[in-house]
Structures are given as C-alpha cells and as structure tokens.
Length: 286
Ligand code: AMP
Image (cartoon, rainbow, N blue to C red):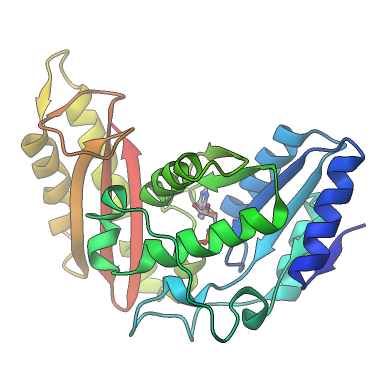
C-alpha cells in the first residue's frame, strides 16, 4: 500500500523506522506531473534498495529554483494522477509537502555550489541551482541515509548534486539514470505538455542535432575539434527557425570543464533552447 505524507517529520520517522528494520531507503526527487522518465528513476531506486527497501518519491514544485518570469505559476500539476502512477510503479511512499513545510516564512539558509553551477543553465537561470541544491539538501536531511536517483536529462544538475553531496558529506549515494525519450527522440519532460502540435513537431530537432554531432565525433578514429562538432549540430538546429538556442556546448563529461577536442565517450554535448514560451534542454554523450 502506497503511503502519502505531507509533513517532513512524518517522512523522517518513516525512513528512520525502515532503516531500523534493516530496509534500505531510495529517494526520487521530482516536481511531479510524472512521465516515463520519472518512472524509470523509480524503477532504478527499487533496483538499488531491493524488494524489501523503502522507495520514496517526493513531489514538490520548488519555488526557489524558478527565476522571476519563469513558469512557476503555470508549471503542470496533477497530484492524484502522480500518486496513481507511483502506486502502479511500486513506490512505497509519496512525499508531497506544502510549500510552508519546506520553507519557513523566515527561512534564510541556502546551499550554493560555486563553479560547476556556473555556465550552461546556470548562466541562463540565475539562482536556479541554488534553489535546487537548497531543496535537495533539505530532502536529504529529512530522509537521511539513502540512495537518491537523478536523471541525466538534467546533466548539469546531476553534476552539481554529486558535488554538493560529496562536499557536505551528505550520507547519500547519488545514482544517475539515463534519459528516457519519446519514439522520435524528444527527451521526456513535464514541460513538453506546454508544446503546441507544431512545436511538438519541431522539438525532436534537438536530439537530431545532438545525434548528428555524435556521429561527426565518431566518424574517424581521429580526434574531432569541438568547433566542427558544434557546427554539425548547429546546422540542423538552424533549419528550425522556431528554436531559439540558448547554448550549444561540448564539455568534459565528468567535470563539465570546457574542452577543445571531442573525444568519444569523454565529452557531452549540451543544448538548451526556447521553443515559443517553453524552455527545452537535452544532452548526449558524444
Ligand atoms: P523534474 O520533475 O523535471 O524536476 O525531474 C525530476 C527528476 O526526473 C530529475 O532527476 C530529472 O533529471 C529526471 N528526469 C526528468 N525527465 C527525465 C527523462 N526524460 N529521463 C530521465 N530522467 C528524467
């Protein structure tokens, strides 16, 4: 039976009790409006903690990770639908706190991961990773020792959270899970619900561009220059005038530092683009 909890103290008790009984705890933090990408994280958490483990899915549209003018107000929400999906997918517990349970009215403590939060999404969404790190560290502190699963869809976020967890000695094993895509390659996202039919037709261009770059980086056994690989992807993106590219970059897959050559399996190409009023991101290991 799935349990639905709203109070941090109740979640802490449930997790403590599970660990006392020798069960491992798995955590999947989300903002809800769940799709198959989220559910793949849930399955990965189950695999990590075993059948006897306690799999917790948190659903919280975290206000501090949205900038002014972003889509906080219209972010899609469907708690009943999400709970049903979690139940079908074998989660044990859904944690869906109200905003004031996560942020006291006079809260003034935030977690900032410095270098790795800059560039890429960090530059286009000032304060975004500060909000993400703050809410994720709150969740980790409520849940306690656990395995937490994050999707590679948010590649920079995964790197930032790994760094935060290590730097702060948080008792959490971070597990990265691969991107789940629609059949035409579009990375699943709750924000895809915003797309009009015409925009939905355009959106897979992001994945096509990344795939072309990957093929270019692998075409010869020779190292390929990042400029060539980016040009390959850019040519495909430019065919879709509705896509306003925010960034298109190749970075070291581990450190996210800039690189000059696109060494296969060592570098990742990351893209963000605005399509109408919807912001899309994607990435691919080259
Ligand atoms: P969100 O609800 O968008 O904040 O995402 C919650 C978690 O689901 C994050 O760890 C995301 O990286 C992950 N996620 C979102 N979309 C996908 C996807 N298409 N494939 C895999 N993981 C995803």
